[in-house]
View 1 (cartoon, helix red, strand yellow):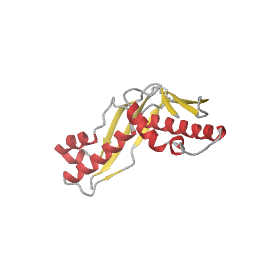
View 2: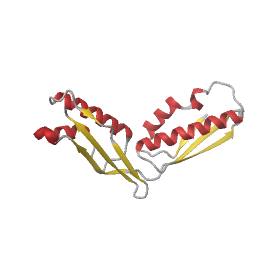
View 3: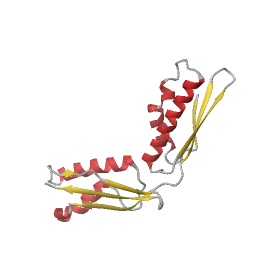
View 4: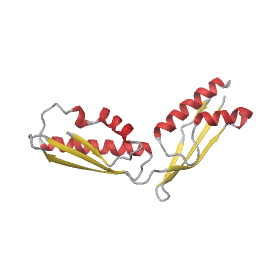
Length: 168
């Protein structure tokens, strides 16, 4: 039996769903295993949960594991997350769209990222995909997006986003 505790309420359902699809413990649930094997899988899942929390913007997250015996000779694994503070973008800088004139505002709206937003990997990726699509719709089918530069400042618990677009 596997239990997740301490997830941030706003993202708990999404994180738990992703975790369940990737978990070593969940994948091996029906297989016989000794305590050492279960503990190794729990440690793998702790790393997984840490990665999922970071992808949501919780860069200070810590995850601990506890494996305890249950009455029916099964083991219960509890992964406890201490997510810490949610990191936010202090700036979102996109260069290369200046040449699009009046379309620049619509293109930026398609990206959907702005200062103050959580540093959420899914939002970043879907925003870039939406910008690429919008560029094509606005008459720039050969536009290229460079790899974004995301710099995380752990002292300030924030980050910056920079992207260059070559509209072609």
